[in-house]
Structure formats: C-alpha cells, structure tokens
Length: 320
Image (cartoon, rainbow, N blue to C red; front, side, top):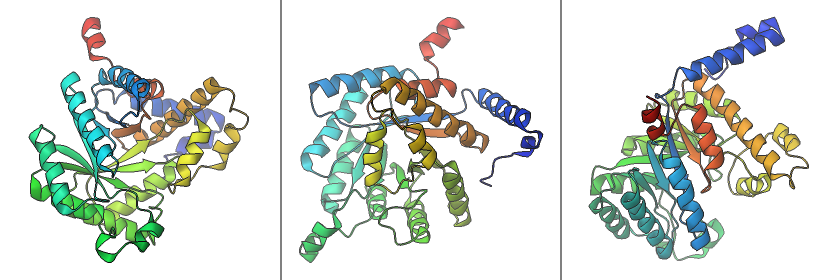
C-alpha cells in the first residue's frame, strides 16, 4: 500500500512528467477537503512573542482545523501554555489545543490541569508522556521515578471529561521503544483508551510513514494517523532536532544542503520544495490532514497550505 502508482514510469521521462501532472491535478481537486493544523510554542521574551503573534495572525486566516501549543513539565512552562491558550482563544477564532505531559506531575495535578482547561472551554488536548532523562530518573527514589506513559494520561483525561485527544506516533520508532512492535502496541493502547487521532513525529521518508500506516492498520488501529510536516528553513537546527528524535535524514538531503549555511534564502527554497514533494506523494496516497511544525514561523507553512488549497477566507469572499 505504500508504493506509488508508477505504471506511467514505463514511458521514461515522459512517464515521470505525466505522473506528477496527475498528482498535481488530483491535489488541485482536493481543495477545501484537505485539513491543516499548526503547532506553536510559548515565546520566551517579548521579541519572540511579537514574532509568534505575527505567525498566528498570518496563518489564522487559513482556518486550520486547530492549533496546538507545546508544553513543558515545569510549573512555569505549564502556566505559559495555559496563558497562551487563553490568549489565542480571546484574540482569534481558532480552536486552541494545549499539549499536556504526565512527566513530573501526579495524577491529582493532571486532573486539576485538565479541569482548568475544560472550564475555559478547551475540548481537545494533545496527550504526551514528555521527555524523561532516564539516567537521572534511575537515581530517584522509587516513588519519585517517572513510570507513566501517555496511555495513562489518556485514561485520566477521559475520566475527567469527554475530551477529544490527540496522541503521538513515530513512523521511525520512538527512541526509547525496544522494538517497532512495542511502539505499535503502545499506539494501539492509546487509541483503545480513547485517543481520537495520532499525530506523527516529523519525517522525510514517505515510505516509512506509509509502511507505518499500513502496519498500524494491520494491528487493528482504525483511527486517523496525521503526518507531521516540518518545513526546513535551517538545516543545522534540523540536525540538532534529530539528535533527540529517531528521525532519519536521508543522504540526498545532506547532499542538497551542502554549503548552504550562508544562504538562508536557498535553505528556504530547498525546504519548501522538499515538503511540497512530500505532500504531493502523501495526498496521492489518501492523506487528507497535515499537521505543520511551524517553529513559530509562518512563511513556509503558509506557502505549503496555499498549494493545498487553504486560502484567506476574506479574500475568497471578496473574489466571489
């Protein structure tokens, strides 16, 4: 199921052109049927806050399905997420979705946080375990060690109220998972506990995502698996991200980005073309929802969404 329909390639370069013309035509026919959503993170200072709101304002006109706000385990980080969720609710018509992790939090604390969100109108949460320093965790007393998983958080949230819940999925396997099968079993448990959808870690190998989707279906997972797309504007930052995540950066990407450190425009052009080719293939394979990791920037994501048919609704009304 993860193979592209490449029958037209038999005709050589003409066949390749015909195939991609077909994909472009099919994507154009999906306008208004493809959903998009965006991830942002709380800013650390006033300059970052100004940049964030510029990005939110630019992307909000595309009417995303929702926007998610990331979350830190420390109490101060929790408050930043909560405050930004409220600000988005007050300043926009967007569906604001907080991330919530169960690291460094008791069940009682998680219930209180969830109830606070429900009380301000939040009905959708991204439930995650959060990052654990395993070496440090092992040195803690048994009652202080983190032994919780996201599935435990999903159960708590569903017990607090009938939240819509998104969870994480890993097409190239979670870095701490002992096996791919363990990872799939864990994802199945999260859906069984009440998750509505899974959003994947970003990836650059479509075959890995499509194979993972097929394996999930074979495991009995029927809920939607939404691909996470990271438009790359800074290759060195990308490499730092991948140090903490099990994400394969293909050799062809390394080759493309050679000697581009001092040319930010070229990096952006490469990033948008790579993401665009990903999207073309995935839509041909039936994907109808993309979640964009914006890094609090709007330019690349806005361009990609334009290709998918997302438009400024005011402009569409005026044009009509």
